[in-house]
Length: 327
Image 1 (tube, one colour):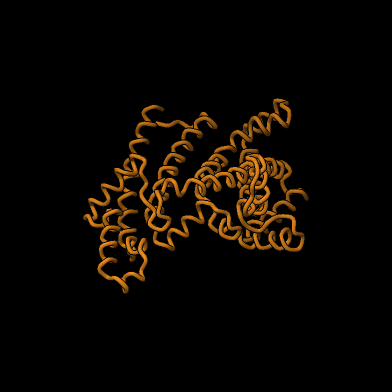
Image 2 (cartoon, rainbow, N blue to C red):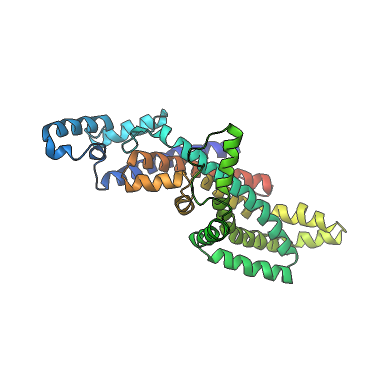
């Protein structure tokens, strides 16, 4: 096990550097000049000499005056030291700029993760146990409909129902504009604004994961060891939850790991529609504004997160199923 983990860590480091070179090269090929975006373009016509001086100073500050390989070396070494660069649009360090949006995204996605799995796992188990019953058929039809609807359609329906027809919840924002109160009151205000985007994320995810859990449970319940357990006279709950569900956990672990990575990725559609100041919206805005320091830093963060998540997923396979051996 230790040898396998060490080999995978070496693999993580290798992939990290390969992807960093590719990502840095791709963004360097994208048209645009971040240094000019930091400056007031009107001065280019009113005072060209002063503008040129400011432009060269901006290029020097961003390190664009050096060769590409030197730029890459400076960027990767600074990142490894915890310096993720300077945002040319927001005029601040990247790590300071992405902090609040990342917190908002994590809050929204963790709440969604807990609710989705609290609903889908019992629902998937129940439909698998009562396969082809009226309840199972109803859930299957409902999940197909929910799975087929895009998230922005669900969002529009929820906005019309709960913000326009029945104005219960606010449409946009993380907090009420100009809100003043204690920390607990601010948290309650954030939860109030989070209801609609959270509802949309949960409704959009129920269908696919319920069907995933159902399929895994049906396969587990058809195995010979389940018939043997029932023949021994074990209670049905013990058969379902101690035997079948544990062996059906491997695909569930795969989903949980992918969602763990998604917790920090944000939902571009949901965050944009509800004006939720999350990291997904920040990344889209940064791409539009060619603020590549932010985009590169976040992309490399997701690379590390994905590689780490895959390692954790493999280790969890051994915990869930002792038959899985890592060598």
